[in-house]
Length: 418
Image 1 (spheres, rainbow, N blue to C red):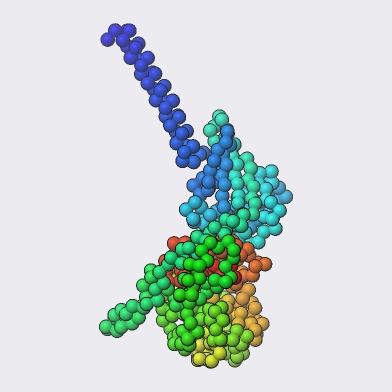
Image 2: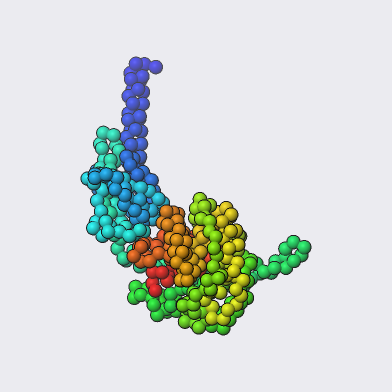
């Protein structure tokens, strides 16, 4: 090959690699801007969780979140413990710790209650030499009410399009014994809809009131349906009704007298604090947690029902507490339901206030893990943000398909609407 041809070949190869490199550069940066994949110096996880946009050399990341706590580190630094509401409708925990020159809070955020819904914006500036976006500013403001209202409408539309199945199925167990069971994916606890907001209580922003009213009136139980409280047996895992006194009162039925008090002679005497490390914070309620929950509900009903059914339920509280104390992975719904019993007992013995405080403090200590409205309902509006409480339960249960899903959904809607 002549020198001239070699020179031409080298020149062509050089041009090829120059064009290839240039093309790869623009392809990478084009793909980067399309997919939102950027190289940031802090909080890289939020790139996948939140909305991103760019302008000149700035990268903006806008997130919706629930504020758990603002912690002061020193005079110049603070941390915001938050749960990001991701684009996939999940809750992801993160702590944002910065100096006052970087992070700022609006006045209403500074006066927050736990679980306040906030909008938090991260602004990064690009370093041209390193091609890294460096954090420049973070700002947090209270979220607009319209965001929550849109979620409520989505929630209601999902509810009214849910098939309500209350049929138990007969199965054959060991020794050919027949028993009634439930398909977790379809079965609905019979009084679940009774906990939903009454149609007349729906706020003006709800868009599908007529369909909701039709759904509600079709699926609530009649007063006659509540005449069988005595048939709610203490043992077993399948619920016909759950905390029936509460739902009957909500519907205006004269079944339970919530001003009644339990006999002091029926109250438990010895206590052991639950090992809070054994509590399972999540939507899955296992077999024994269901059995204990059913016993708690039976005790609760027997405290308030107009016609006394069977005092053995209340007298058996000590054994129940002992059994629950020994259980590994006691579900949060079962644990928090004990607050209802302690609250009833505290009306005749104020030592039960300590029991109530123990449940409350345990929930607050694990607020980021809580998924059940049963736990958040023990707090008043002055203690936690009700809108945030609603959003937390909504997003934690959005894919929940077990028998408690409608019960939880209706209680959650009532919490923010009623």
